[in-house]
Length: 430
Image 1 (cartoon, rainbow, N blue to C red):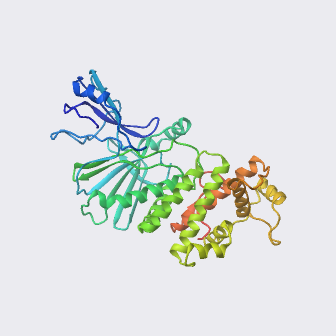
Image 2 (cartoon, rainbow, N blue to C red):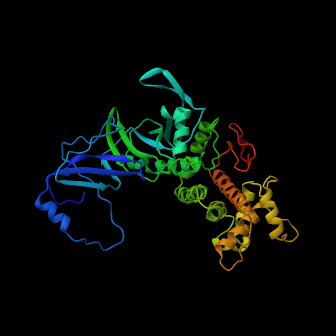
């Protein structure tokens, strides 16, 4: 912490959920002249941004704990008390033989492998998925509390945050590794879990083990969305299988740095569009994500066009770029018959293009252009037509991301009338 007083603070460091995820240091000591000097010292800030403080410890300090009391005691009352939100900080050193991490607000799944409670071997539940790819082995277990229906019901109704899964990362050959060697694969796991849930469920508090000793940790608190009812292509009846294949295919694709960079932004567009925002910005975000994927696939990867300019010239406009990408993915762009509001609005407001009736993609681009370009006249489409267009745009982006990752399993379509558990379909390109 930014503190010129050499006297140690007595207190603790806590990970907190509300009002946002953060790591907070609490400490206190008797006030000294140095404390008074620090409190009166004028700010010398010269930039808008500042680095969050970190903490240092005495040489003989116990840096790691095996368990945590859920209600830690407050630090003793002293005349000088400090509370600081901490920045990301690594403690300890590698090498490690495995890294464990926590996953908050994950997904419900009824098809995982069975695990037993360590304190009651007669109690078991569907919990585990395991994948091995790119020299890494990943295991993710659903927690005991997340095996209960009442837990998910309460978490969703409260819009809260809680740890639902515990993950572990190892080298497939069992060899030790440095924590920084795992940074890329941990980032890929983060991106893929966001795609899976349609929310930010960033893994938190990674801890490195060597044998039965904790030797390294990263104290960090990335954003975690509150539990909300958002569109998801996962289905509880097969969710472990779906996430397993997504991780297996996705980690292979994202092992290329340029692929990871593109999908990081595409996933951000998707999660933002899928959140509880108005349909107008959601539609615009989805279109931007689709345009990014189209460029990544057709220019950067397949080299179908030699440059961005050549691609833009060939496609003529944003709709042309996205249409070519969706065609590559074999994604149907017709308006589904049950989206009656979108069909009626498109037929009334959008003339046929060279004798061809407008489809769902045309409707999405038509509305997006009228919100993005202020010179266009805004049509008085009904709120239902806007909502259906937003559903279609997010559906296209979701499938586009899965296609980029070479996912070939089942999905729950957001455009399907069948919404019950177990109603899934193969992705269109299979």
